Each structure stands twice: as structure tokens, then as C-alpha cells.
Length: 296
Picture (tube, helix red, strand yellow):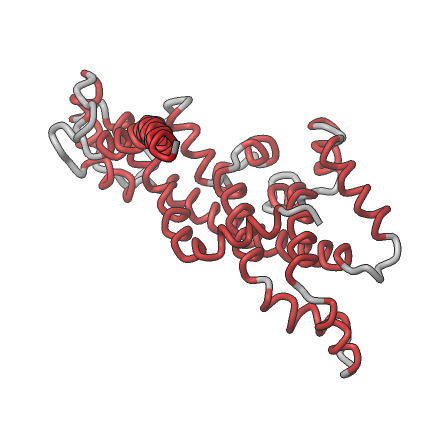
């Protein structure tokens, strides 16, 4: 009986390894292809020779990226939107979540129900657009940051984390020592909540960095475009204006596939910041997600 069970376990493990291996290949191949395409020549891309490894390796696409001003303007704009938006969102989210985690907070159930209601129902795109327009936020940084500054889901996750990890005895002890609620929150709760703060920062930063729909609706000037809008114009609309870039016209004339090469290198450049950020908060990620997602 025991041998039979061991055999069954091995079969299950073998099947799991096969399925996970196929899943890994499915996820990994597009990434490898994009990297290889960014280092391949335009002729190789146009003829479809690139499969897995770079063909006719060249750094021409990356050299063009560094000289294409629109990409770097969008890169700087995305950094500003992401940093400011993450800061604003984290402050509002944590200030909303902590009171909802306190048993002595009056109106806790009513406010929690309101937050839950917003997860299922919203005014829609047109009312949101009219609100942003009437507030005078059109074509400004705040039109991207404020409409998505507070996520009900993030508030609930943070509230659950506070419920699960902040001992009530700690609050009682601080109150006996005359500690105010705000001081307790800022000097005790926040330092003990690094895992959930790191996770929420990552979620919010990814959403802002990768977002293109709100900027597409609310931003009208190209000088205020985030990187994703610039990338969208290059990928979907094939609009690459080399005339206003500091790129040698002879290089553009000599390589008619330069815009196609630029697509792949721009994807790599736009993905690097989040790839660099993730390893620094990886140790907090699993802990924060697991504790914050437990129903409180």
C-alpha cells in the first residue's frame, strides 16, 4: 500500500513538473524573443529570421533609443507620475485602512460597506471624465493620479493586515503612556507594517507605470505623455518622428527598418525600472500578500 502511494506521488510530481515546465516555456519565450529582437538587425526582423537568439547582433536600436528625445521625455514623466502617485495613494490608503481596523472606531461597518460598494459599482467613464474636466484637472499630472488614488481592494488588504499583525495590547499600552492615535500610527504601526507597505507600493507603482488609458483620455500635450503612450504610438500606430530627434538623418535613411527595431528596445527600456525595483521588496512580498489577504 505504501509503495503504491509512493508511486502515485511520483506520477503526480512528474505531471506537475511537465505542466510547470510547459508554463515556464510559454511565459519565458516571449520575453526571450523580445530581448533577442532588440539586439537583432532590422533586416533579420523584417524577414522573420529571429526565433530564439539574436540574428546579426547590433546595438543600433538601443543607440537610437538613447537619442530619441520623445522616449526620454516620456520616461521622466512616467517616473514623476509613478513616484508622486504612489506616495499620494499610499498616504490615503493607509490613513483609510488603519481606522477601519480599530474596534473602537464609530461607523466602521458603514464605511467598510461604502468601500465594498465602490468595488462593485462605479459611475463609469463618462461621469469620471466630466468630473475630472469640471475640477480643472485636464492635461495635468493630477488627472492621472487622483482618479485612481484610493483602491477599495488595497484598503481592505491593508485593514486586514493591521487586524492580523498589530496587537491590541500594544495599543492599550501606548494609550496608558499617553501616546496619541496619530503618533501610535506613525511611529509604531507603520514601522511594523513594512511587508504590506512594500506590497502596496509595488502594486500601485506597477499600475501607474503601465497605465496608458487615463493618460490617453486626459493628457493632450505630447510633452506630458508618459512612456506608455510614447510606446503605444511606436508599437500600435507606428508613429516615430525622427525629424525632431537628435538622430543622424543618414542613419534613418540607411536603415528603413529602424522604427521596427525601436519597438523592441523601447519595450526593454520601459520594463527595466520595475525589474530593478522588484528584488528589493521581494522578501516582503509573500508575507504581505498572505497576511493581508486573510479575511479579517
